[in-house]
Amino acid sequence: MKHGKAVVLVVEDSTIIRMSAVDLVLSAGYEALEACDADEAIRILESRNDIDLVFTDVQMPGTMDGIKLSHYIRDRWPPVRLIVASGEAILEESNLPTGSRFFSKPYDNHAITDAMAHLLSIPE
Image (cartoon, rainbow, N blue to C red):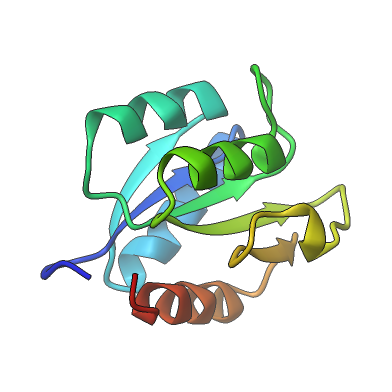
């Protein structure tokens, strides 16, 4: 793990939910980046090498949903930690890449920040 603040990329198409997730990330002491869909998230991941965790919604417009995005990230950027949330689909964690965490919306903020802290504390 590098020194300094962990960087968390929030991927969420709903502006209000994204802003609240960004606030949650900031309040947990991490740096927050935001993307409105998977395509934007991938552009950000391609342009930076300091992203530690991606917190994504499942249902999104664009070329891929949050589940496809999480598998894509796991394949291209294996060290990046993943948290996936959804208000619709109740997912089996087995549908997600190994080491991902799934939360149903509305999620408990403490559960999310605890999961972030836990995932970010695992050695690469």
